Length: 150
Image 1: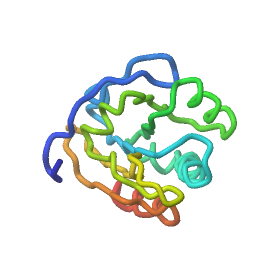
Image 2: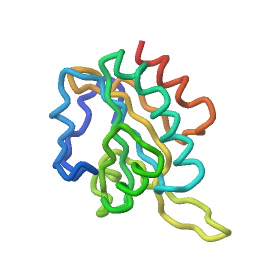
Image 3: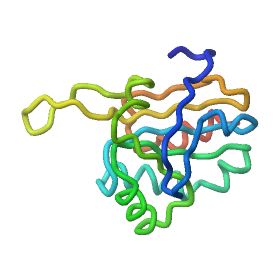
Image 4: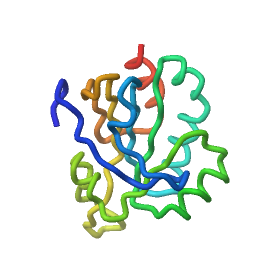
């Protein structure tokens, strides 16, 4: 995955109960963000930052799609609890996570485990990757994303 290349297309089930293909969003910018787990502190802050800036995002002809390994039931509880105004996609089989190379070895309480590395990809209206953020630190991330949309 390199900047300037066509973003890999995929199909996943969304929190709205519908299938979503990345190619369905040609004509809009897509903020595609991968996060480790619903209802955890960092992931909640990140989702709420996107929620709180949704007007700025939509004013730039952009949409937000969040992806984690959580199931749709978990996503729907997360959306309801925090009033999230965007679709969360379920990648329980980690197929799209692997496609976007966000499964990384992490250290959890001294054990090495494989998990999602917090990452955000910005895809332009034609479906090309224009920016990637790897190893995202939540604090200040929304500002960097909004700057890229301009």
